[in-house]
Image: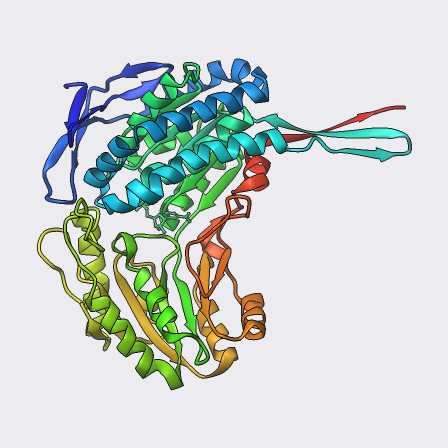
Length: 479
Ligand code: NAD
């Protein structure tokens, strides 16, 4: 296989990165662009042998990296951030070509956030306190020890952002990493390996393996030398990973799917609320946090819908490389099929498409709003992961909260109201890892992030990331 491919003018090595070297596999898989379905190149298709080699490299590199002074680890992570900033344009165009998300978001939002992930966790590490407690004259000294090799498995909807949300704190903590990006978006993880090496990250501290989760996943997640597994992806895959990790009781962090509500009360600024609702089509709806269930107070439902339709129909769907485009393609023909399947079954069950409800050319799906949907129906209960919203009405806070909490998920929720006290009452009753009031998506990295119920296990962000990636130790010393 050829080692390098050119994607939008950028050279990307398609082999694994293990122990500071590029490693090929006997097999490959074809990576395609969602923009036009064209083949971008052949990617190394790893299996158990590559998993074994990568974990061994991470294990061998661990003692020296764990012993590296915090300030030096932080310096290298800042150098990685510098490298990301220097290559923002390349990373942005490669990511867009690979997963179809908007170039303008990658340029101005996502890649700066990737760099920030490294800077933030580098700085946070230096502020982590080593706590001391006194008991009967004995000192209890609490330390945050590096845990060991971590396996990090990530999805395709925000590949480099989600990968670095894990890679950065793990490396800062003094752990070593095996990163397995999604097979539908393998490219920027490979570029990250180059950037990290150029920044001076020692060989074996960050390893990247490519391939299908079904072929390389088990070997990574059941490996006895792996000390942490952090996974972002779907609930069914999380179940498999949890079962595989159970063999060694490897600690898991799971960031999973959602079916989040947007509650619109009659006292809300309806224009703001309709704007928040339309924002849920970002990344063609392929966002875990997306508030896909619009719950609108009966008395304003008609007016809200009118404003929503006005905004939704003004969205421009098209080539994600075009700065004027608001909605790009779905990531893969299989994802498109899945989305359309959900919509067609909902319509067959009596739902009405107020906007959209159909495919467009290529891998595009029309932004869709479905009404006349039952609370216990598939379209209300299951994650579609596409540009598909449902609208239901409610009367009063109790019904709003009941509908909002009535799924097996609990990732996020958004509340639109003009009444601060109502906002407090309602948010305190919502089951969700993140709740936004009159806003969406803004988040401080110091705050915990994760999901309740089947939206996840554990929290990452700020100190919570270090709670996960470190082994906490209490050393008790006699007077
Ligand atoms: P997925 O579960 O199909 O795949 C995610 C990753 O798991 C991929 O890298 C895949 O190769 C790997 N994988 C598959 N089988 C595996 C196995 N047996 N062992 C180990 N790894 C395996 O999910 P997806 O379709 O890529 O992503 C979409 C899902 O991710 C949605 O449910 C979405 O809500 C969720 N998501 C959650 C968050 C969050 O922060 N909570 C963020 C983004 C996406």
